[in-house]
Length: 143
Image 1 (cartoon, rainbow, N blue to C red):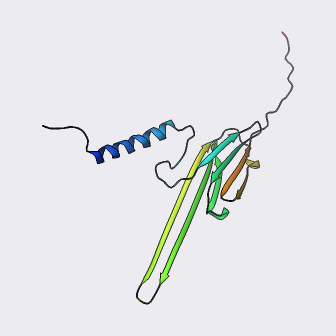
Image 2: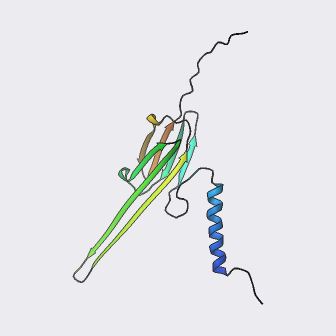
Image 3: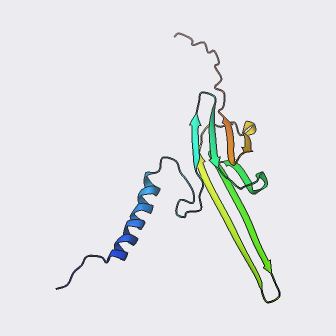
C-alpha cells in the first residue's frame, strides 16, 4: 500500500517552513533578518513625545553598532568579529566567528535630528522624538 504522508523528518522541515512564513507575514513590525537565529530582541514603546526602542545587545560595544534612520525606518545594525588563536609546537588553530544582525522598525514622523542613543549594560536605548505638531491659528472667512 502506498502512503502519501510525509516522513517524520519531512514533516518537521515543512513545519519549520510554515513557521517562517507565518512569522514573516504576521509580525506587527516590519523586521529584517527574521529567518536565522542571529537576531536580537527589541522592545518599542510610544508616548506622546517620542518612541523609545530598547535592544538587547550583550557583548557588543558602541563601535560595533550602527543606527540609521531613513525612509521612515529606523535600522539597528550590529556586527561582531571574534577570533581565537591557539598556537603550540605541532599545530596552529585559529577560529573566527562573524556575526551580523540587522533589525528595521517603521517609524513615521520622527525628528531625525534629535534621535539619541545610549548603550549601558548590554541594552541599547534609542529615543526618537516625534515632530511637534504646530498649532497654528487660522481664521476662516464666512461667505
